[in-house]
Each structure stands twice: as C-alpha cells, then as structure tokens.
Image (cartoon, rainbow, N blue to C red; front, top):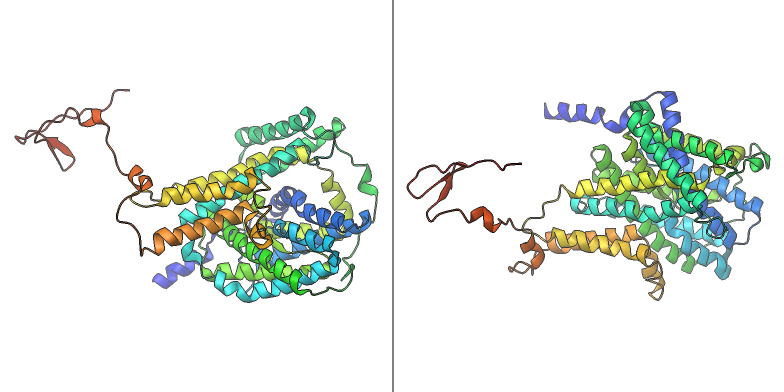
Amino acid sequence: MTATLSQVQELHRPEDEHLGLFANLAYGFQHVLTMYGGIVAVPLIVGQAAGLSPNDIGLLITASLFAGGLATMLQTLGVPFFGCRLPLVQGVSFAGVATMTAIVTGGGGLPQVFGAVIAASLIGLLITPVFSRITKFFPPLVTGIVITTIGLTLMPVAARWAMGGNSASPEFGSMANIGLAALTLLIVLLLSKLGNASISRLSILLSMIIGTFVAAALGMTDFSKVADGPFFALPTIFHFGLPVFGVAATISMLIVIIVTLVETSADVLAVGEIIGTKVDSRRLGDGLRADMLSSSLAPLFGSFTQSAFAQNVGLVAVTGVKSRYVVASAGAILIALGLLPVMGRIIAAVPPSVLGGAGVVLFGTVAASGIRTLSKVDYTNNMNLIIVATSLGFGMIPIAAPQFYEHFPAWFATIFHSGISSAAVMAIAMNLLFNHFRTGNSDQQSVFVAGMERTLRYQDIACLHEGDYFLDGKLYDSTGKPVPIVAHEH
C-alpha cells in the first residue's frame, strides 16, 4: 500500500502538469524574455575582450542561445542519468566571465577558453556524485539563506536595467529610463491585481510587450536593425578554431566549475522548494550531470559553461506556473532564436528599462521565497539565528563592495566574488559546524541563543500572587480557586 501511494505521488508531481501548446509557448516566451539580457551579456563581454568583430560577437550570441536551448531541454525533459526534470532555464553562466576574460586577454584567445571549458566540465562530470549526496546538508536553514541571497544579489541587475543597461550611455540613469521601468512595474502590479488568473500569470510578459510599445512610441527603442543580417543561420562547429588545452587555464576554469556546481545545487533545491516537489540526491545528481554535459558540449558551437538562471527561478515563483514543459518550450524557443538571428534581433530591441521594471518584481519574489523558507527554521535554543545573519552578511559583501576580494588570491576571489556562492559556502560550513559537528560545543548559551529564549513581559506576571499555578490551561490561586482570565481589549 505504501509503495502504491508513493507511486501515485510520483505520477502527480506539480512539475509534470501539461498546460497545452499555446500556454506552454506563451509562458515559455516569458521565460526567454526574462533571461535574454543575461544570456547575451557573457558572449558580449568575452567577445569584446577578445577583440572580435560585431559579426563574430553576433555568432557568439547566436551560439549561446542555441546551446542554452539544448541545455534547457536536456535539463527539463531529461534522459537517463541526465536532467533533473524541473522547470530550470539553462544559459551561459556568469561565474566564468572574469576567468574567461583573463584567459583571453592573457594571450590564450577563445580556443584556449573553449579547451579549458571542455576539460574542466568533464572533470566536473566525474565529481558530481560528491555533490549529489549533500542534500542532507541543505535543510531549510541553508536553502532559505541561498534563495534569499539569490534574490538580493540580482537586485543590482534590475537596477542597472532600470537605469538603461549601458553605463557608458549619456542616458544612463535618466528620468526617462527610470520612468519607463516604473511604468512597466506599475503595469505588472495592475495586471496582477485587476486581471483574471491567466492575465495575472502572464503579467510579466504583457508588461514587457506594453512597455516596449510605449518605448517605441517615445523613441526609446530602435527596431531599424532588425532587418540587418541573415534571417536563418545554422551554428558552425568550431568556428573560432579547434580548442586548445592548457593546464593553467583548465585549473582556473575548474574553480569556476566547482562554483557552478554549488550554485546549480542551490538553484535545483530552490526551485524544488518553490514548486513543492521532492529533490533527492539522485535527482540533484541528474541535474548536475546535465549541467556538466551541456557545458562540455557548448564550446563545439562557440558557447561557454551552462548553468541554471536564477532570475527564471523567480519567474516560476511569481507566476506560480510550475510545469517543466513550459520551460522546455522556452528551450525550443531559444534553439529557434539560435537558428533565426532575426528573432534574436527583435527581442534585443526590448529596452533594458522595461526588463528592469519587471526584474524588480521577479528578483524581489526570489528573496521573498527565501524569507518564507527561513520562517520554517527553528530558532529556539540553537545558533541558527547567527548562521542566518552571518551567511546573509557574507553573501552581501561582493554586492556592497565589488572590489573587496581584489587583493586576495585569484582562486579565492573566483569563488567568493559571487554573493550566491559566498552565502552558500558560509551557510553550509556554519550549519555543519554548529548543527552537525557538535563536538566542542559550549554548554554555555551565547547571547544569540539566549536572545531566542521564550520571555515574558514584567507586566504579564506582576499581578500573579504567591502560590498561583497553571493546570490544563487554567490559572489557579494557592487555594485551588480558578482565577478569571480575560482577553485583551482592542
């Protein structure tokens, strides 16, 4: 009977819901719009650092869209041993930007970057069994910290988008850009309040479309370049040359891969928490293997390391659409964009300010989901309060002071320059130190533990007499006579 019940629960997981073709495409397109700016940012940065021509940078962007689409479909639909089958959008990871830029500017060029990504990802594929067995070290205490940090670390991205995206532009931070972001945010809120369930779920997408039309009417976006370039183009294998494998480059990229594994573990567990489905070590391992396989194959098309996009985790939370088939549709759209550069140019015309207005809601929702998870944590007679405080503070350091780790060793800065990985490492380490490795724990309560003890106000007990006592929820005096208790007057 127990086995039968377990099988029924397995067959009715929330992520397996089928919404229909139109809904899948609509919600999937919303996911693409949400992460498009992020997925093109890495090839733009690395391509410019490599001194590529605009056409070659365009090929890097197209390759990233195509590889991200394949990785998303592998992660959401899955094959045996690969793919966690959760609504996670995959794309080029930000974690490797600094390392890849250093390799390129150091004379290695893109071929050495691609070689390092392939080699490090294959090593990462071999060590995923270690990471897949750490789910017991990710209680709500840890996952809540990580989810909250994901949302908080993404807020600067939303702010930069709202200001215009390009800090070199004279219009960056103008009232026009911020006003457009505010209008988009207002549309999201109005559609969420006044619309029906379908409109509310599509509020992010609809607000982006309306915001883009408003921007076009005000002359704040340019569609003139949509017709430039080819309409259809197949990705070219090793367009930038055969990969070059260097030891130093591979070691530095391996650190990035470890960071990616930590962040992906957090994202897989976070989305599982948000949609309310079970994520065990086997499922986590399948997700990590899909990540590493996608990362090792992406350089064939001219792309880089792949990982889950945290902003799309926020979209799952804010819309309540849990179906993995919606995200698989987003993967199909990304593949189409990789084959149809003209579609990519259309989406690129969406002003960053519009993305910023929607991003405030998306990223804020991620943080709110983390706070909701932290509300489940027991803070009585333990050190959980200081674990939360220290981990969140540690995760905010790279956001508050981006140059904080500038003089640290490169390997250390690579790991801790990300607020997400900083908070994750600290939360895991402190949870192990205080809640698992109890040897050496003091029997004296710290101020943090004592601060969470149950306390009563003096005025609550001032009226008690000597000998008063509680029994079965009632107050009695020393003679055993019940003492009337009245409710507070409002």
